[in-house]
Amino acid sequence: MAFSFRIDTKHRLVLFKARGSFSSEDMLTCVEKVVSDPDFKPDFDHLVDLRDVTNFMSSADDVKVRARRDHNSRKLNASRIAIVSSSDIVFGMSRMYEILMDDADVTVRAFRNMDEATSWLGVRTD
Image (cartoon, rainbow, N blue to C red; front, side, top):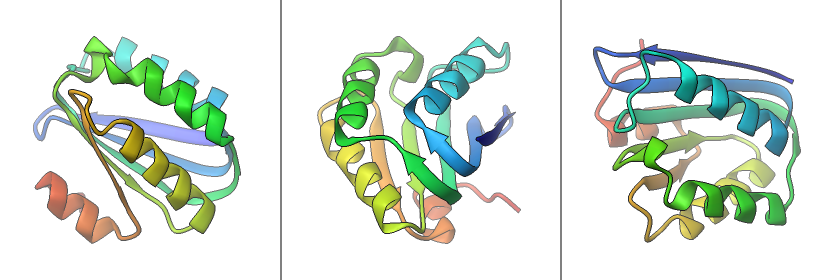
């Protein structure tokens, strides 16, 4: 598992990237690191890049648990989360998370294309 994140305070954006094998536990670890960063603010948007994940080790039940945990989280207050993936499995799980978060304070959207995701967030990453 390899992941990294960067908080862009100017654009109020958390940039997250994962590659290789990635599990629900890895996501939890990353989220804990992000929200404990002093630059993080609950209303920052998130760009989650999962295009380089080669082994997604999360089940549908794991996604449901994550959604329940995130649904009313004050750490995701009115933010938007764009998840970008190229794998059918990762995209499907991302869509499931999007649907489960439909009535939450946070807005989630799954994408297959980085340009569409950044356009939806209204940011540029280059």
